Amino acid sequence: MMVARSALRLNLGMPVKSASMDTRIERDSDEALVASARNGDFAAFETLFERHRNLVYRFVYQMSNRRDDAEDLTQEVFVRAYQNLHRYRDEAKFTTWLLRIATNLATDRARMANRRQALENQESGAQGALAWMTVGATEDPVENLEHDRRIEAVKRALSALPDHHRNVIVLRDIEEMDYKDIAVTLNCTVGGAKLRVLRARRALRDRVTALLADEV
Amino acid sequence: MKRRDEIIHAAFEGGAESLRPRLDRAGKKELDGLIDIKSALKSLADVPECQLSNEHLRNAVLNRPSVPTRPRTYWLATPLVMAAGLAAVFFLSRPQPATNSPVAERSGTSVPATLPIESVPQKGSAEEHVAVKVRDNVPAPSVVAAQAASTTRPVRRHHAASKAPKIDSGLVVRLADSNTFDGAHEAANRSTASDVAATESYKDVAASESLPTAGGAVESAPEPVVVITRDTGNGASEAQEVKAPSNVVFGG
Image 1: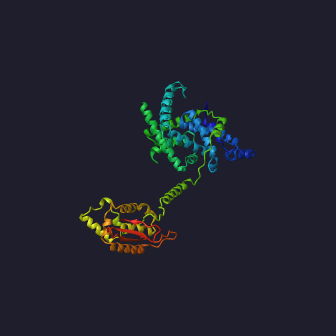
Image 2 (image 1 turned 60 degrees about the horizontal axis):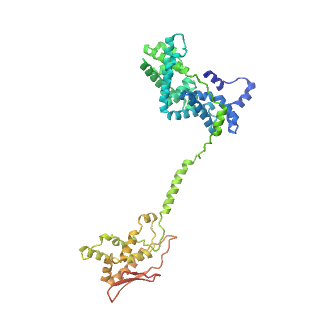
Image 3 (image 1 turned 120 degrees about the vertical axis):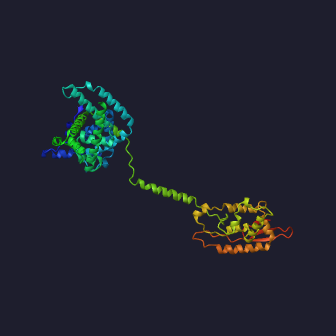
């Protein structure tokens, strides 16, 4: 079962206009739950976990491309968050803080697994060999084949990108985060975040172009 | 903004249709390729469902030992510890004040006495005559040792460790052994009067060189006096320390 980004957005929450629910919203806000968790209320932290685990999981899955690794990393992110709740400042959103922890952990994990990354590339190549069995997006088999080939090339190019490039591609082009949140997550300015995204897209484009040219 | 960056921005951030009429054929192809990449990235957004449960998280949190928080001033402790260690080493390497050990390495009279034993000239040689003359002009080494015992000079601590008076003390022992250094006896035999004069001159030098001791410095014992006499029977001279708790016979 796949988790769509639209379902995630419901958790991130748009502002609710009903005034009768303001008190409950304030009580259930991330900041209130964080305050309760700081005071030892583990149930409040569990609520935060249920609310944001998919966000963290999706991000680390894009960084690791493995479900078991992504689940381990997600759990590690929340454990670290619980142990460092006293360091969380309310200026940033709790989700942004979580993603910052996830970014650091995923980067560290990726550095220690360069060899494993090569194996994953082989694994993704094997998956590509079976891609013709999947149902295509359109009824034209040639177009479907071309579409799958392009997706596979993008996936391989993304996996081969350096971590600092892959981070911003995932945050901006897959998770569609705002530049402001990306800047907070990466601890840089908004202009710096835009520049990083542009450089990462350039690198991705070059790699995808090279992969598609090799296949031809 | 460069043209290629403009195409990237239009493909990912929107505005591709407004840019397309202004592009040539290669630009349009690149724009289409970037739009395909963007759509492929969107297809990567679907991920397998996360199967983590609250129980997993609770177990992970409860079973994880809490991270010990390091104090923020931890890095300040490093230079303090190093300084304390250096101070301890400096303190331990300080020489202990010893009243009965010779510390007269600064005395000008000890310079010829610190000649290595290998450099002692042979009897009868020209070098031997020169050495005897030199020794005649300076007090006997035993007297130097007496001076060392009597004058307590404030020695700078960091010099004391590097200039330990081992050579002088060893020399005194060697000089006491008549078999290894006959020149002292010869000099003593040559003139008793000159020995006494040398003793007196040494006393003057010792008195003039005695520096005021710093506060807390140990005052020395009463200055011993060495009297050199000649035995009328065999003509050998001997030096005897008088006016001191322990009389030590030198030479002879």
